[in-house]
Image (cartoon, rainbow, N blue to C red; front, side, top):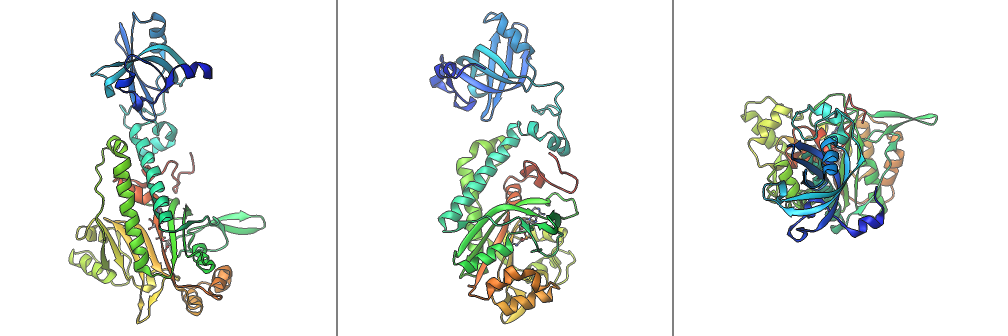
Length: 439
Ligand code: AMO
């Protein structure tokens, strides 16, 4: 590689930064060789960096030495180019580079395990196996540029709303969510587990007076089934808020989703273009339908469901045809929600709970929580759980626990639904599922 002094003489630019003002000037570019086309008297190469592509044009008469180098460079090699910018309407982006220096910094092997130029389509599994190459595709990289914006919006929005970011342990001693299995790990001479949710910790934090907390972190679910919307390690955006109820935190949630969309529309136009997605910011407020209403709607559509059942995939498909894109299903039967969900005082078989849906995909679930010690112990027992195993949690309810509510929003699912991805694995750089433990 050339020295730093050399670099300072010529300005380094990303492909997207090349414009009219560079015409006739020298620029320095780093990137990967996307494609080489040899027409004999002239060689065209496409250089790709994280911001896009630019054409390198090398006529024989420019330099026989350079043309020889460019002609034989292998696709996906890392190169350094210094050259002159020239407007060229036929080139992608409207400019080409006439090279003066061409250096292969790191040569790629051949054949490639995956075609980055996507002339040969690949199955998702093959793509995930060679994920570092898959991520070189602008379309794939765009997904993660948008994911970055999504997480940044979440963090900004919640911080502006007065939520304090926390990190809770991922190595734990008990389960939090019924329904899915835990991953056991060996923890010195004891058994421990990977946490399914920050649920218990975020509730305990309500007893500290912090009042509003959020966490963006991994959750681990030992789900055995293999579906397009389940992972064994997912990223969850969790909040917990004191002195409010389920409706209070639903309002935070819908405004958050609205903000994420608005920020992506505002800041990620280029990446949406790369993926070919047009976004509409969802209107507020989101529709709220009760569990009872949802059951009736599903029945009317001819799907089978009995009161007290969770909604099956076909039931949710049927439901999504009857409602707006984003909607809440509220007031679920207490029986099918976790022990920490608060029942209505006058109708304890119904709970102050909700799910946020995008079409037929569940994005989030939440509730007002049980903050009354005796009720919490009773509810743990009713679910067949031993309160002694939850000592660290329930003791926080004995010394001044305010009423509180919260939710957990699946980050991977949110991105999946924003970008209309068919498989949640597309929304995760290195997904973990039943069969995938590498890369
Ligand atoms: P729940 O179990 O519904 O609720 O999880 C909350 C949200 O996390 C996402 N999610 C998943 N995403 C991908 N793969 C999975 N296996 C997976 N499991 C969950 C979903 C889901 O809606 N403690 C409660 C939240 C709360 O009440 O605050 C909880 O964890 O998008």
